[in-house]
Length: 259
Image (tube, rainbow, N blue to C red):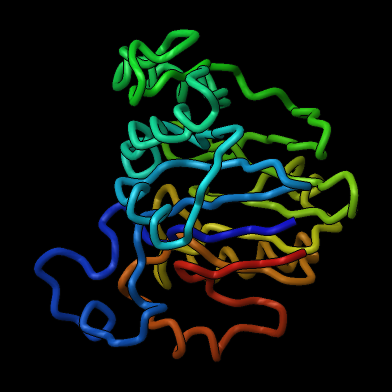
């Protein structure tokens, strides 16, 4: 299994508009954070999770050339507004609708923003087409499974995802954009080879986990390796990374995990 971090930043991105703080002005490329999304490859199956406003640029930067399935964790703008650029993958799939899995909230947001995409085939070559499907608790695929659980995130629930590759048995957990990890989600994540957790900033936030809350969640899960994502400009990569316990790191744009 391979996991590519296309983006690890917040809805404002880092650097932020009109900000001259040390992180926004940093020359360390790990402090340059586009909006959060990942690309997972399980036994050759390409699963894209979320599409940030920079999705097209992220795909070009990381040479993403194929998408079989798209999963939208929730309908907030920093996760959905790049979906129109999935049109290229509809072309590559031969002009068929791309399966889009999400919650009811996520599907309704796709329908409201992209009504022209909801059809079996694109209206013309070069246009996107999406087939909306409610994410099941377990998505069974020939290449493995994607288990889902709901995570509280302010007024909506985010899809927490656990990927298990059939051939290798490798397990990867992705819990972005959440205030806490419910007991069921903790149990789903146990035994993962890597866990990604929302770790927004040092101070508390009403709908995201703080860094200390993410560290506590990683310890409760018992993660062998944990990565924090959805990071603001309040945290300098190298400085904070050095303070974390063994097995915990900041993710960064372009990070690739081979499990």
